[in-house]
Length: 239
Image 1 (cartoon, helix red, strand yellow):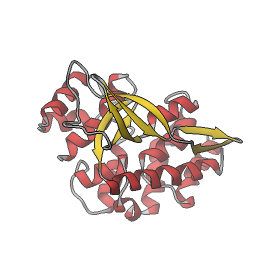
Image 2 (image 1 turned 90 degrees about the vertical axis):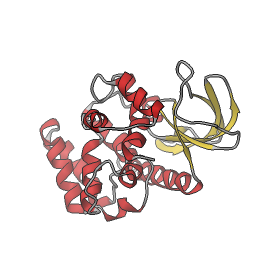
Image 3 (image 1 turned 135 degrees about the vertical axis):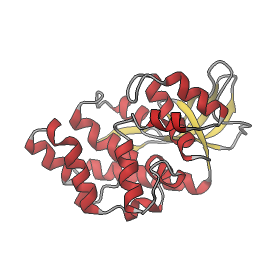
């Protein structure tokens, strides 16, 4: 899949909810529905000020010219080997450059300390550790659950929703974790149009803000779970 379309699939719903990006939701949806891209979509996606710097960091560390290369986009939203090649010093400096003016010195030092502890340039790090400090959204458990990239196995296909079996985010004894499997309904179509074609019961899908984004291969499920659990553990060290 083209990297800009892949990125747009995950960016669509938070943009629709006015959490990030510009006022381009209709255009993003139409690009994704048509599975077509052009420089206009690239310009729209560069306005995602939370995610785009991570793409540039991952691409630069891996000598990939295009931040919207599909491998880079997958690394940020799902996770892959590119994350292991991100230079620690560059990651640290990127965080400082982005957030130094928005945080007091003590909070900034706390955040920057996550880089040498092993943080990766992955969306789950941004959700579990960045949001709580910069005040982008309330940092409730429900918000983190919606904002992280979730995954689940389709159990039932409804007209506008999937019923998926997934592990929700839970807070147990003051620590974040993934809970027991339970059913969840995620939106798959708006006005008869969605991003996942020909879904089948048993498929694994990803979702963001309760919107079905993509069908996942087994390797991607493993990588997403790995990064999610890894950054939950990292967040729990200073929760």
